[in-house]
Amino acid sequence: MKIRENIKLYVKYASVCTQSIMQYKLSFFLMIIARFILAFCELIAIKFLFTGFTQIKGYTYGDVLLCFSIIQMSFTFAELFGNGFKAFSGTEWSRKVGG
Image 1 (cartoon, rainbow, N blue to C red):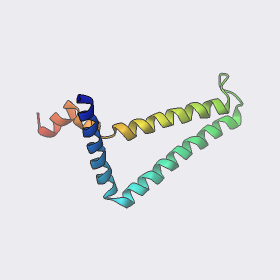
Image 2 (image 1 turned 135 degrees about the horizontal axis):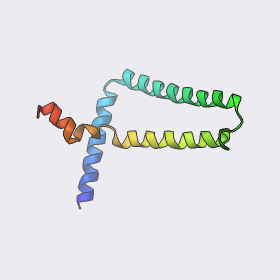
Image 3 (image 1 turned 90 degrees about the vertical axis):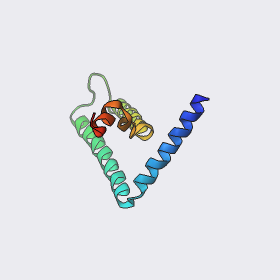
């Protein structure tokens, strides 16, 4: 039963966060564009790195891209599902309260 309550609380929290982000639509779309540009620039950097080399310690271009994409997806999911929870930590809250 406790798990259901926690899931309901998380869904409510996610809904509130989404509503607050979508309140400023231009900022939201600019943030999405900036994140795509950042990811694209990282891909270009890997491509430039492999123009001079065929392998790095036995890893080919495809191996490095696979590793990069898995890491990128894991950070994206972590940010998607856990963004904002650091504000609930004790140290963050105590600084705001003044304790």
